[in-house]
Amino acid sequence: MKTIILYESKHGCTKTCASYIKEKNHIDEITKASDFNGNLKDYDRIIIGTPVYIGQIHKKIKNLIQANKALLLKKKIDIFVCGMNEEGYEDMLLMNFDEDIRNHAKIIHAGGAYDFDKLGWLSKLIVKKIAKVDHSVEHIKYEQMDLI
Ligand SMILES: Cc1cc2nc3c(=O)[nH]c(=O)nc-3n(C[C@H](O)[C@H](O)[C@H](O)COP(=O)(O)O)c2cc1C
Image (tube, rainbow, N blue to C red; front, side):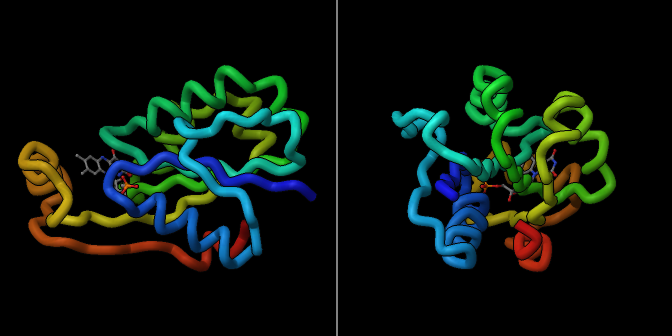
């Protein structure tokens, strides 16, 4: 089965998760969605990774799914979402993925991280105010990624 991993990542956690899934499943092709210049038709299985920021998945991933929806619904699709908000996870899915995609794809919550060495001042402020976290933490759910 020809497989590709397409992801976007702002601060590196989704990239880390994408690399984990790549190694675990012996997948050769992995690329940032914005760098992908192939044809999705050539793949049987497409694994998509995105972070969530302020309730929204990455814009390039949202656009990729919207632009290729009909094709994606004919393929085996796995989506892994990196985010730190457990309580808001189900609402986030409803807001970001339409019903057809939610019903068709296997979507997993890969957990996430706050990396204070990489966050800008505004992001740090938001994380401190909203998540009440003021230092780097990592909660990657490897057991969820093993379901892919
Ligand atoms: C400013 C900011 C806003 C965030 N908003 C959300 C959010 O709404 N929901 C969520 O689940 N996680 C949220 N997160 C956590 C990120 O999804 C998490 O840090 C993730 O690992 C980022 O992935 P990346 O390192 O690949 O960019 C936020 C993080 C930051 C810094």
